[in-house]
View 1 (cartoon, rainbow, N blue to C red):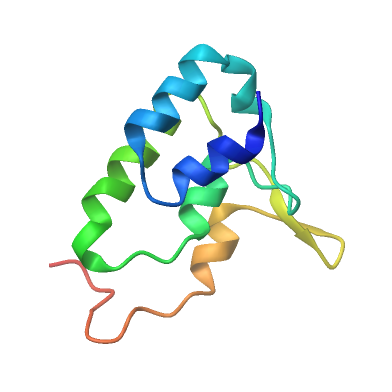
View 2: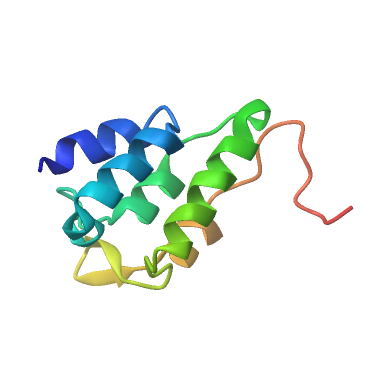
Length: 102
């Protein structure tokens, strides 16, 4: 099965397509893109407007439930493994939003 279909299904947040692919081909849980990102890393690296955040979170929860490791190194650059924490700790909050908990 093609990993391309998996990543193409993640881009539009198509939970049903991602679930169908991973249920039919559980080996796809192990695939990585050209930057070393697993499906969860890839999802979390995509920009998401607030209006579709719920769909993104639902897909992330599904992938976490399958056992994808949020702390798995990826984004290998400059001879340093980076995790999702590294990626998000360098991002600035979106305009018009607050990073403080409400």
